Length: 150
Image 1 (cartoon, one colour):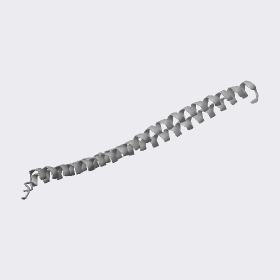
Image 2 (cartoon, rainbow, N blue to C red):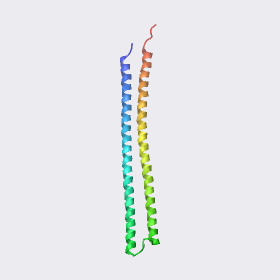
Image 3 (cartoon, helix red, strand yellow):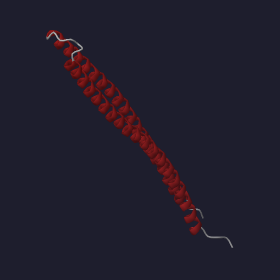
Image 4 (tube, one colour):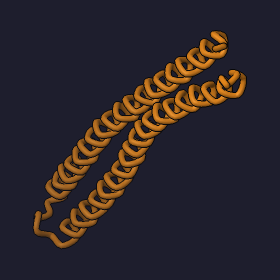
């Protein structure tokens, strides 16, 4: 005789496992979405930082030109040109360093988003396997307790 409680238990277990897998996949999708949003915010921050550094360099050049004019020095003066060159080199180094750091941060955020998506897919697959295992185990147990016909 088939035991309805065994069948119901196996079905509830399977459904619960599938729902838990879907919930974990949704949670991981939300994490991935947040990481991608963080990446966009980092891109915006990097652009603003870049623009601020360029603005700072422009102010440096303007100030250097004003100081040269006040001191009645030519723009072709070697010390003024060396000062501008040093300022430009320092600004470019800072911009390159900030760009590299930002790209690294964005890369980490994209990896975290991809990893969360993968974890969500894995949770769904694990839930499916676990649900199928519950049903198969229930079938095996029912076979063990069901009398065979002569």
